[in-house]
Figure 1: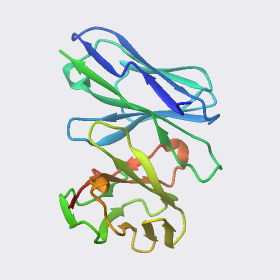
Figure 2 (figure 1 turned 90 degrees about the vertical axis):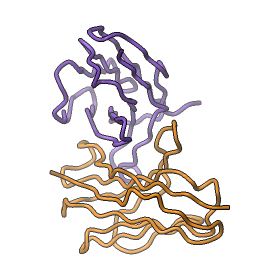
Figure 3 (figure 1 turned 180 degrees about the horizontal axis):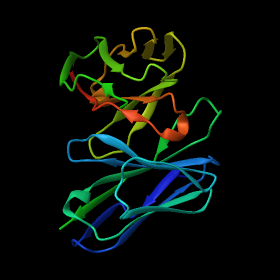
Figure 4 (figure 1 turned 180 degrees about the vertical axis):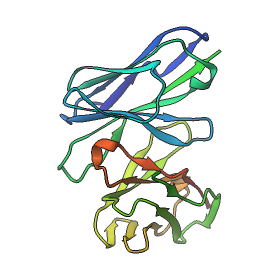
Length: 114
Length: 113
């Protein structure tokens, strides 16, 4: 009955590889997000998707691309991985107009680029 | 540039005392304000939300908002060792919820038994 789930939990890969992280929410929310938490623990928004439409893109390199096959899923594809991409990536979801815009986070994916 | 500022700490509080965490934000049009708790190696967990000026209480937690001063605070009464964590202040700015949350860098709280 997990509300927001992500796979994989850990991802270790070589520079230059392409990888994907999957996110699913069963809360019926209409907006999903990807956040990056760097080594200094600073959490920053990367993308948000509302009804399959990209709302924002906060100066994220175009090597990162979100893909939303339906309202319950928002996957993150990363091409040509770089050392600086190592971080924890969190997926989140919210519902506009329902108890404000509270966002609920997935467990995170720790990406290590070697 | 939207910014949220917090004292990084660590803030050390004796067990049973009141822990007071503070946050300021730069976007005067900000609409919604949140406190998340994050244990090491875990995801942020929402503990309080506040949308209008004044106080909002939930159990041992009280959130306070002063939009004129662009200031948000969180009080934790009867602090327990299990409250030891990093507390993240987060704001939804004037652009609305679809812009995502702007987080502060967090305050590391230590409750001393």
